[in-house]
Picture: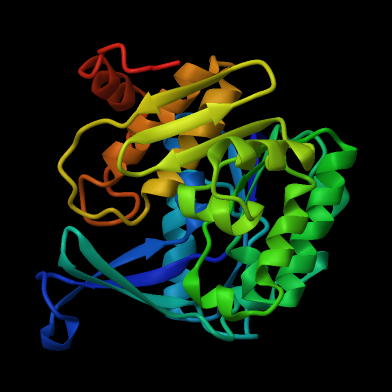
Length: 316
């Protein structure tokens, strides 16, 4: 197995027509969740991924699990639970630059995940553990599960890739940022956006942010700037890769696609320039259609898109 990821996926209902949702009577159903978005993006590129979660013992849970399994993701460790319902969110698209997401996930089945959801021998042999800041915010038990897996990853030399993916609602929890800062101690590749870098590292200057991240023992820092591209830093090199210019239809899910590109590039042993360019390409494709995974490409589609954007767009 190449990659393990743990987190909640939800049913998404989005009005078929843009505008204020209060006037909508016709909705389209999707499925979404940061971790399963990453898992699906990676399986479409030919990587093997195991997704761990809980869904409710309800029709939405059955549909969600069937869909993700159908995308080629290993769902053998996903539990169907009576502890709560499958999570739900509404995506309100006022226009391409005003997309509002409304979550209904309190007490969901995934929030009841426990540390015993996994065993240590299920982590051995992994290449990458993808972790976000969402799962620790679901509940204390979900956070304890993440910490346990991080300990196992450190023990078994599994690469940890941390995408903070901070949600505003979780910031209301008094210790939420402290939880995420604890995860930094286990992180090998850290991929915040510009705002998250400030929130977690407590400095505004990018060079100081990188130094702060390195002080945690992190080996690679990649800072996303949605307006321009992405900066990357290791102890040996640094660079900037501009974004791809595409028409934005739905920007939600771009960060998950970017994370999948980073993981895929690492698994394929690319250079950091190539890894970040792949991540930018996946992020660009993700925002060209409504739905987090609708335009995630397979390997041939990704290659064709990147060939059509062959300009030397790496600055050092």
